[in-house]
Length: 575
Image (cartoon, rainbow, N blue to C red):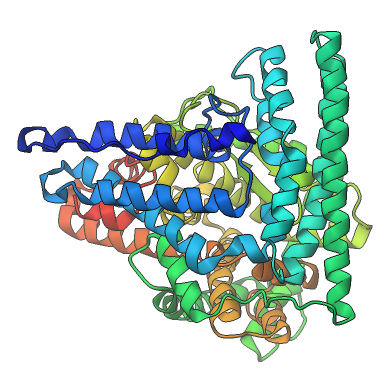
């Protein structure tokens, strides 16, 4: 790991003379220098952004490495603060705000949040290895040589992880055990690919040694975590609560979402939105009652009535074997719809590859977009779907009912087109790496929720009461994610209260509700991003419509939002 300790000084900014005449343009070269230094310090983030220059070095997550990160954040903040924001162009002001937020956030994460102590799932070497192995940014032998250097430090990496972890939460410990089993599988695949390649016999021998040592290190880490977890049962060691608490939650909310509201305000908004939506869903259930339930008497309880209609309709879904093929079929149709109705303009050649979620990424989201970064705008993006093959029939049926004839296309829209994938494509084209990499989650996930609404407004699903009810259920899901997130981490909501809310007020089946509860324990703030961002976008759209009157067009509004490459809405508004 000597490579990473390379004269730490080189990461720190050299003083730049900011004469008045150069002030206006000073941010761009500064941002460029910052990114170069950051990718050297943090090769893993570079890989996620699609930049592979430093991919051979693995950052060792020890106290010395964290001290280096902290010094880096302090030094660059001092340098950014020397710039007079009033003298920057509007575009540069957004970049300046995003960089400051990133560095202040890093400082807070290292000093206050300290997730490196309590979340063992942060430590997993699989993600970057998988990207290097499967991204064709260079010829295969070159990528394999990069990986050969990278995996040499895997034992040191897991040794550092063990010295960093203090009283972890049980929930994250168990997630780490499951996901790191996926890392062992991936190292096995890497060894097979290397042996079948054109590398020299010496390199192949090194591969066998290093993948063997790496797998042993992961196995030892997993075994150690298992002992820690058992130790909680027999009183040998403590486990931290998975709940963040109000104070840390609000701070994390500000840094990660960069929305215009606080967590508490967003929670209030979500409660109001839920009440309005349930009234609307009650009326739709009345309209659909005899069509779906025949002569059955209507229950007097509104939520029970909505639940019965949803349950009846949810039986219409694809067969288990057709689930992935159906998603593959839908994506090009969604893209053509968006382009032909001029909602956005998307490159007809770019489509995410639908695949089964790799084992090291399973255990959090059922579906997830794994997008190519801004340095590789034409690169391959994956749409990961957790396979249903191994599920017992009743579990698979519960999933298929959740992703039924109406909700499956809505879910695909959310994650791909016009949602997250389209948003990512625009961000990657925006010419501002800073915005594409450091934009807030509220804008990203809020756009995805808004994308579903935008499609329905353009006539998708022909405005049938069935489609409207199911779309409302999807919107209710985003609202409930926010209520659950704040409820669990800031208000101490119990498992019983959470499951009651999910099944009775959000119409999730018990299987889905149990998964949501598990996710609420493992994540914080991110589940609120969709609703927080969506409500901001809707408020802003209303303001633009009022201001522009007849001049308002959806496409211009969407281009304005997405053309800023993921910048938070509150910064776009200031322009």
